[in-house]
Amino acid sequence: MKNLTIFLFTFLILLTACQNTASEETVTSSKSTVPATAPPQTEADNGGLFLPAGFGALVVVDSVGPARHLAVRDNGDVYIKLSVREGDKGNVALRDTDNDGKADIIQRWGDYPNDGTFATEMRIHQGYLYFSSELVVYRQKLTPGKLIPEGTPEVILTDRFPLRWHNAKSLAFDQEDGMYVTFSAPTNACENWSTTQDKSYANVKGYSPCRDLKDFGGVWKFDKNKLGQFQSDGQRYATGLRSIVAITWNQTDNSLYALNHGRDYLYSHAPQHYTPWHEAVLPAEEFMKIKKGDNFGWPYSYYDHFQNKRMLAPEYGGDGQQEAAFTKPLMGLPAHWAPNDLLFYQGNQFPARYKNGAFVAFHGSTNRTPYPQAGYIVAFIPFENGAPIGKWEVFADGFTGLEIIKLMDDVQYRPMGLSEGPDGSLYISESRQGKIWRVLFNGDSTNFGTEQLAEMEARKTKAHLRIPHKEKDKLFAK
Image (cartoon, rainbow, N blue to C red; front, side, top):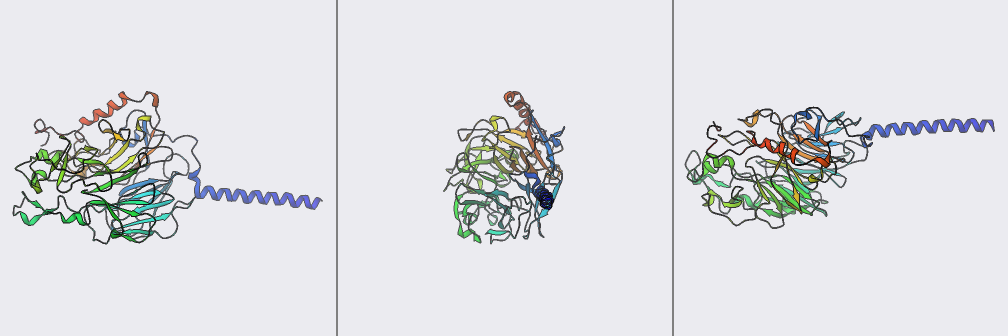
């Protein structure tokens, strides 16, 4: 009996030790799945950002390289797509092991060839991590507890055309099996350069019909479950879309939304009808709800957000006064600001007014001469009953590092990607150095409103946000 007691006691000790060891191994591999007892502390200076009062931010990681889009897993792990031209390991994974909001593990990964700097997408959908180079859409299965996906990436879609301008493969997934992929156009306005001998390219005409529209300038729908697809395996969902980087499926109304980059060079191509001011403030970047079969009119038209009209493009006979009959956007946003990500907020951490509204990351302009470059913010667009209401708002500013931006290369950070964390935090990536911010609300939501919003609205008077006046800002433009 005594020997049996000793045996059972020894067995229990060994069993407890094994359980403790197994528990320690589990924590080591998936420690970030343990929920934080309290939200992390934001930084006194919000990581350099200006936010509405009541919001705070912290820097998750300072510089992981040229970051594009990002995705946050339900355990808080962060995955980032890098803009890498060659080699492998074009992705970065981050893990916070002590719940202070900052990444303790930073790991490059990606067993696939990088093929260009427009590599953009990173999304988590139904247990898979989807990401894209310029020419290929990949996915890998996420394993519970493991930071890096195991195995070799599966190829969902390959673009068989050569590398070109505006070549990001941004993705959206509907609530069934649809995967929506952008095939943006490689030209500004489908110009036929043989139609002008002027070295300034004035009065150039566009190809009619535009040959780019055969394979580009639109969104195609594919089966997300089918491997090894090419563009011919999909169906054109919508057309007349010059360049889309920001695209998403809105779960609230079960619809596709995107932001289109407007064309350039109205004055340069038609100086008899437009001025340098027109070239700087037109056309709008378009916020669109996209339905199957929509035609938004590129390159034959552009959207004038001052007149709230779609106008005939000068390359096709327009003079700034003639309207064109194509699908209109939900709203026009400031010209040349380059909207590169779109997120409909689904969380409950932020004040109620943000629920179901749209956050937009503006990468910032490159060609508003003779006026300062503009944009470089994260904006918010309130929604009500499935439609935007009021004006766009400044949500996060302070990325530029300077007041007046003569050249895009002078700015410190360019906002690029957006993702919502499991606790309702907003994560922001930027493409210059790869800094990642996490924005939290730590104020009183019952008293959030007019005062806090007015402070951010006042930032629209800053040089990098205000729309130059056609007459008053002549000196400002020098």
